[in-house]
Image 1: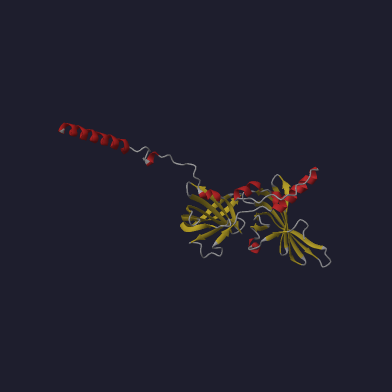
Image 2: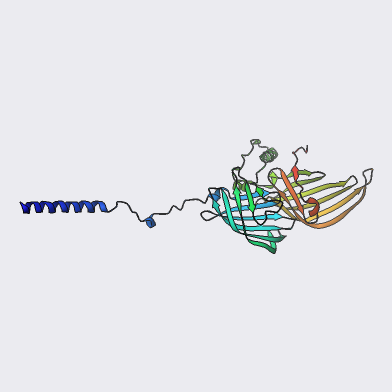
Length: 317
Protein backbone atom coordinates (compact mmCIF):
# COMPACT_ATOMS: atom_id res chain seq x y z
CA UNK A 1 0.00 0.00 0.00
CA UNK A 2 2.81 2.38 0.88
CA UNK A 3 4.48 1.67 -2.44
CA UNK A 4 1.21 2.30 -4.30
CA UNK A 5 0.65 5.64 -2.55
CA UNK A 6 4.23 6.67 -3.22
CA UNK A 7 3.88 5.90 -6.94
CA UNK A 8 0.59 7.82 -7.15
CA UNK A 9 2.13 10.85 -5.46
CA UNK A 10 5.09 10.71 -7.84
CA UNK A 11 2.74 10.63 -10.85
CA UNK A 12 0.75 13.66 -9.54
CA UNK A 13 3.98 15.59 -9.01
CA UNK A 14 5.17 14.83 -12.56
CA UNK A 15 1.86 15.91 -14.06
CA UNK A 16 2.05 19.20 -12.12
CA UNK A 17 5.54 19.85 -13.42
CA UNK A 18 4.47 19.20 -17.03
CA UNK A 19 1.49 21.52 -16.58
CA UNK A 20 3.71 24.26 -15.15
CA UNK A 21 6.13 23.91 -18.03
CA UNK A 22 3.30 24.15 -20.50
CA UNK A 23 2.09 27.52 -19.17
CA UNK A 24 5.36 29.12 -18.13
CA UNK A 25 6.40 30.04 -21.70
CA UNK A 26 4.47 33.02 -23.20
CA UNK A 27 2.90 32.52 -26.59
CA UNK A 28 3.79 36.07 -27.74
CA UNK A 29 7.10 37.92 -28.08
CA UNK A 30 7.53 40.34 -25.16
CA UNK A 31 10.90 41.68 -26.32
CA UNK A 32 10.05 45.38 -26.98
CA UNK A 33 13.21 45.92 -28.94
CA UNK A 34 12.04 43.39 -31.50
CA UNK A 35 8.70 45.13 -32.15
CA UNK A 36 8.80 46.78 -35.58
CA UNK A 37 8.69 50.63 -35.57
CA UNK A 38 5.92 52.32 -37.52
CA UNK A 39 7.84 54.58 -39.91
CA UNK A 40 4.63 55.89 -41.44
CA UNK A 41 4.00 58.32 -38.54
CA UNK A 42 3.96 61.83 -40.03
CA UNK A 43 5.39 64.92 -38.41
CA UNK A 44 2.25 66.96 -37.52
CA UNK A 45 4.08 70.10 -38.66
CA UNK A 46 3.53 68.82 -42.22
CA UNK A 47 -0.08 70.00 -41.90
CA UNK A 48 1.10 73.61 -41.65
CA UNK A 49 4.20 73.89 -43.86
CA UNK A 50 4.32 76.68 -46.42
CA UNK A 51 4.81 80.41 -46.85
CA UNK A 52 3.09 82.95 -44.62
CA UNK A 53 2.82 86.73 -44.95
CA UNK A 54 2.37 89.78 -42.76
CA UNK A 55 2.89 93.25 -44.26
CA UNK A 56 6.61 93.43 -45.12
CA UNK A 57 7.49 90.25 -43.25
CA UNK A 58 7.42 86.77 -44.77
CA UNK A 59 7.88 83.43 -43.02
CA UNK A 60 8.58 79.95 -44.37
CA UNK A 61 7.71 76.94 -42.20
CA UNK A 62 9.18 73.47 -42.85
CA UNK A 63 8.93 70.14 -41.04
CA UNK A 64 12.08 68.62 -39.54
CA UNK A 65 12.23 65.05 -38.27
CA UNK A 66 9.47 63.58 -36.12
CA UNK A 67 8.30 66.69 -34.22
CA UNK A 68 10.71 69.38 -35.34
CA UNK A 69 10.27 72.51 -37.43
CA UNK A 70 12.56 74.85 -39.38
CA UNK A 71 11.60 78.49 -39.77
CA UNK A 72 13.09 81.35 -41.76
CA UNK A 73 11.65 84.85 -41.68
CA UNK A 74 12.52 88.10 -43.45
CA UNK A 75 11.46 91.66 -42.69
CA UNK A 76 12.07 94.16 -45.47
CA UNK A 77 13.15 97.46 -43.93
CA UNK A 78 13.85 99.07 -47.32
CA UNK A 79 13.95 97.77 -50.88
CA UNK A 80 17.35 96.15 -50.29
CA UNK A 81 17.93 96.14 -46.52
CA UNK A 82 16.19 94.04 -43.93
CA UNK A 83 16.40 91.47 -41.16
CA UNK A 84 16.48 87.70 -41.37
CA UNK A 85 15.72 85.13 -38.68
CA UNK A 86 16.65 81.44 -38.74
CA UNK A 87 15.47 79.02 -36.07
CA UNK A 88 14.53 75.42 -35.35
CA UNK A 89 12.01 74.25 -32.79
CA UNK A 90 9.98 71.40 -31.39
CA UNK A 91 6.25 71.11 -31.97
CA UNK A 92 4.11 70.95 -28.82
CA UNK A 93 0.97 69.28 -30.14
CA UNK A 94 -1.02 69.82 -26.92
CA UNK A 95 -0.62 73.61 -27.10
CA UNK A 96 -0.18 73.82 -30.90
CA UNK A 97 3.12 75.67 -30.53
CA UNK A 98 6.60 75.50 -31.98
CA UNK A 99 8.99 76.31 -29.14
CA UNK A 100 12.53 77.43 -29.96
CA UNK A 101 15.71 78.54 -28.17
CA UNK A 102 18.20 78.91 -31.04
CA UNK A 103 16.95 81.85 -33.13
CA UNK A 104 19.59 83.84 -35.01
CA UNK A 105 18.75 87.35 -36.22
CA UNK A 106 20.86 88.98 -38.93
CA UNK A 107 20.97 92.37 -40.59
CA UNK A 108 21.22 91.74 -44.36
CA UNK A 109 21.43 93.65 -47.63
CA UNK A 110 20.29 92.13 -50.92
CA UNK A 111 22.86 92.46 -53.70
CA UNK A 112 20.78 90.58 -56.27
CA UNK A 113 17.53 88.63 -56.48
CA UNK A 114 17.58 86.15 -53.57
CA UNK A 115 21.28 86.94 -52.96
CA UNK A 116 22.22 88.90 -49.85
CA UNK A 117 25.19 89.76 -47.69
CA UNK A 118 25.14 89.59 -43.89
CA UNK A 119 25.98 92.94 -42.32
CA UNK A 120 25.76 91.95 -38.67
CA UNK A 121 24.49 89.20 -36.37
CA UNK A 122 22.16 91.00 -33.97
CA UNK A 123 21.59 88.10 -31.58
CA UNK A 124 21.86 84.33 -31.23
CA UNK A 125 20.07 81.74 -29.07
CA UNK A 126 16.85 83.74 -29.25
CA UNK A 127 13.87 82.27 -27.43
CA UNK A 128 10.18 82.29 -28.24
CA UNK A 129 7.42 80.31 -29.87
CA UNK A 130 5.18 80.27 -32.91
CA UNK A 131 1.52 79.68 -32.12
CA UNK A 132 -0.52 77.79 -34.72
CA UNK A 133 -4.06 79.16 -34.57
CA UNK A 134 -7.27 77.31 -35.38
CA UNK A 135 -8.01 79.63 -38.33
CA UNK A 136 -4.81 78.64 -40.14
CA UNK A 137 -2.80 81.70 -39.12
CA UNK A 138 0.44 81.83 -37.15
CA UNK A 139 1.30 84.20 -34.30
CA UNK A 140 4.97 84.78 -33.56
CA UNK A 141 6.10 85.61 -30.01
CA UNK A 142 9.80 86.37 -29.57
CA UNK A 143 11.48 87.43 -26.31
CA UNK A 144 14.20 89.51 -27.96
CA UNK A 145 11.84 91.42 -30.29
CA UNK A 146 8.95 91.82 -27.88
CA UNK A 147 9.37 95.61 -27.82
CA UNK A 148 9.31 95.97 -31.60
CA UNK A 149 6.20 97.54 -33.10
CA UNK A 150 5.17 94.39 -34.99
CA UNK A 151 5.17 92.03 -31.97
CA UNK A 152 3.26 89.79 -31.62
CA UNK A 153 3.17 89.32 -35.36
CA UNK A 154 0.35 87.36 -37.00
CA UNK A 155 0.92 85.62 -40.32
CA UNK A 156 -1.50 84.15 -42.81
CA UNK A 157 -1.01 81.88 -45.79
CA UNK A 158 -1.28 83.70 -49.14
CA UNK A 159 -4.59 83.14 -50.90
CA UNK A 160 -5.40 83.48 -54.56
CA UNK A 161 -8.02 85.94 -55.77
CA UNK A 162 -10.31 83.33 -57.35
CA UNK A 163 -12.50 85.96 -59.04
CA UNK A 164 -9.45 87.39 -60.83
CA UNK A 165 -8.39 83.91 -61.87
CA UNK A 166 -11.84 83.15 -63.30
CA UNK A 167 -11.86 86.47 -65.19
CA UNK A 168 -8.45 85.74 -66.68
CA UNK A 169 -9.58 82.27 -67.77
CA UNK A 170 -12.69 83.76 -69.38
CA UNK A 171 -10.56 86.30 -71.28
CA UNK A 172 -8.24 83.55 -72.53
CA UNK A 173 -11.20 81.43 -73.64
CA UNK A 174 -12.77 84.35 -75.53
CA UNK A 175 -9.50 84.99 -77.35
CA UNK A 176 -9.31 81.34 -78.48
CA UNK A 177 -13.02 81.07 -79.33
CA UNK A 178 -13.68 78.50 -76.60
CA UNK A 179 -16.53 78.53 -74.11
CA UNK A 180 -15.52 80.35 -70.97
CA UNK A 181 -15.57 78.50 -67.66
CA UNK A 182 -17.10 80.99 -65.26
CA UNK A 183 -16.87 78.70 -62.27
CA UNK A 184 -14.50 80.18 -59.71
CA UNK A 185 -11.58 77.99 -58.77
CA UNK A 186 -11.87 76.46 -55.31
CA UNK A 187 -9.87 78.13 -52.58
CA UNK A 188 -6.57 76.50 -51.73
CA UNK A 189 -6.66 74.25 -48.72
CA UNK A 190 -3.00 74.78 -47.86
CA UNK A 191 -0.13 77.15 -48.48
CA UNK A 192 1.52 74.49 -50.64
CA UNK A 193 -1.54 74.28 -52.93
CA UNK A 194 -1.61 78.08 -53.31
CA UNK A 195 2.08 78.13 -54.13
CA UNK A 196 1.63 75.66 -56.99
CA UNK A 197 -1.00 77.76 -58.75
CA UNK A 198 0.37 81.29 -58.34
CA UNK A 199 0.90 83.11 -61.59
CA UNK A 200 1.33 86.71 -62.62
CA UNK A 201 -2.08 86.84 -64.31
CA UNK A 202 -3.69 86.43 -60.88
CA UNK A 203 -2.13 89.70 -59.68
CA UNK A 204 -1.96 91.89 -62.79
CA UNK A 205 -4.13 95.01 -62.65
CA UNK A 206 -4.34 98.50 -61.22
CA UNK A 207 -3.64 99.25 -57.56
CA UNK A 208 -4.38 102.50 -55.73
CA UNK A 209 -3.22 104.23 -52.55
CA UNK A 210 -4.29 107.84 -52.07
CA UNK A 211 -2.86 109.83 -55.02
CA UNK A 212 -0.56 107.04 -56.20
CA UNK A 213 -1.61 104.35 -58.70
CA UNK A 214 0.38 101.35 -59.90
CA UNK A 215 -0.42 99.38 -63.03
CA UNK A 216 1.03 95.86 -63.23
CA UNK A 217 0.91 94.25 -66.68
CA UNK A 218 1.64 90.68 -67.69
CA UNK A 219 4.28 90.82 -70.43
CA UNK A 220 4.33 87.03 -70.91
CA UNK A 221 6.66 84.26 -69.77
CA UNK A 222 6.37 85.38 -66.16
CA UNK A 223 7.67 88.89 -66.89
CA UNK A 224 5.89 92.06 -65.79
CA UNK A 225 5.95 95.75 -66.67
CA UNK A 226 5.07 98.28 -64.01
CA UNK A 227 3.89 101.87 -64.39
CA UNK A 228 3.54 104.18 -61.41
CA UNK A 229 1.89 107.61 -61.35
CA UNK A 230 1.97 109.85 -58.28
CA UNK A 231 0.36 113.27 -58.31
CA UNK A 232 2.46 115.13 -55.76
CA UNK A 233 0.57 118.37 -56.44
CA UNK A 234 -1.91 119.91 -58.87
CA UNK A 235 0.93 120.97 -61.17
CA UNK A 236 3.48 118.19 -60.71
CA UNK A 237 3.38 114.46 -61.34
CA UNK A 238 6.03 111.80 -60.78
CA UNK A 239 6.06 108.70 -62.97
CA UNK A 240 8.04 105.50 -62.73
CA UNK A 241 8.50 102.65 -65.21
CA UNK A 242 10.22 99.35 -64.46
CA UNK A 243 10.09 95.67 -65.33
CA UNK A 244 10.96 92.38 -63.69
CA UNK A 245 10.25 88.66 -63.38
CA UNK A 246 7.43 87.42 -61.17
CA UNK A 247 8.47 84.95 -58.44
CA UNK A 248 5.49 82.76 -57.57
CA UNK A 249 7.11 81.41 -54.40
CA UNK A 250 7.50 84.81 -52.72
CA UNK A 251 4.81 86.60 -54.76
CA UNK A 252 7.27 89.34 -55.68
CA UNK A 253 8.46 91.24 -58.72
CA UNK A 254 12.05 92.36 -58.27
CA UNK A 255 13.38 95.10 -60.52
CA UNK A 256 16.63 97.00 -61.07
CA UNK A 257 15.73 99.18 -64.07
CA UNK A 258 13.42 101.73 -62.48
CA UNK A 259 13.20 105.11 -64.22
CA UNK A 260 11.63 108.12 -62.51
CA UNK A 261 10.43 111.15 -64.44
CA UNK A 262 9.00 114.34 -62.95
CA UNK A 263 6.65 116.44 -65.10
CA UNK A 264 5.55 119.99 -64.30
CA UNK A 265 2.36 121.42 -65.83
CA UNK A 266 1.09 124.93 -66.44
CA UNK A 267 -2.38 126.03 -65.30
CA UNK A 268 -3.77 125.28 -68.76
CA UNK A 269 -2.49 121.69 -68.59
CA UNK A 270 0.45 122.14 -70.94
CA UNK A 271 3.82 120.60 -70.02
CA UNK A 272 6.30 123.11 -68.66
CA UNK A 273 9.12 120.67 -67.98
CA UNK A 274 9.69 116.91 -67.98
CA UNK A 275 12.98 115.58 -66.66
CA UNK A 276 14.45 112.25 -65.60
CA UNK A 277 15.14 112.18 -61.85
CA UNK A 278 17.07 108.89 -61.88
CA UNK A 279 17.55 105.58 -63.69
CA UNK A 280 18.40 102.01 -62.68
CA UNK A 281 16.21 102.20 -59.59
CA UNK A 282 16.09 99.06 -57.45
CA UNK A 283 13.10 97.68 -55.58
CA UNK A 284 10.24 95.20 -55.63
CA UNK A 285 6.50 94.82 -55.73
CA UNK A 286 5.16 92.53 -52.98
CA UNK A 287 1.74 90.93 -53.46
CA UNK A 288 -0.18 89.55 -50.47
CA UNK A 289 -2.83 87.50 -52.24
CA UNK A 290 -5.79 89.30 -50.61
CA UNK A 291 -6.06 92.04 -53.24
CA UNK A 292 -3.39 94.26 -51.71
CA UNK A 293 0.27 94.87 -52.45
CA UNK A 294 3.21 96.96 -51.24
CA UNK A 295 5.84 98.84 -53.21
CA UNK A 296 9.36 98.95 -51.84
CA UNK A 297 11.90 101.13 -53.63
CA UNK A 298 15.42 102.03 -52.56
CA UNK A 299 15.17 105.70 -53.53
CA UNK A 300 11.59 106.21 -52.33
CA UNK A 301 11.80 104.15 -49.12
CA UNK A 302 10.90 106.99 -46.74
CA UNK A 303 7.65 108.03 -48.39
CA UNK A 304 6.52 104.43 -49.01
CA UNK A 305 6.67 103.30 -45.39
CA UNK A 306 3.30 101.95 -44.28
CA UNK A 307 1.64 102.35 -47.69
CA UNK A 308 -0.65 99.53 -48.81
CA UNK A 309 -2.13 99.49 -52.32
CA UNK A 310 -5.61 98.07 -52.95
CA UNK A 311 -6.47 96.38 -56.21
CA UNK A 312 -9.19 98.13 -58.20
CA UNK A 313 -11.94 96.19 -60.00
CA UNK A 314 -11.33 95.46 -63.67
CA UNK A 315 -13.53 98.41 -64.70
CA UNK A 316 -11.44 100.76 -62.51
CA UNK A 317 -14.40 101.83 -60.40
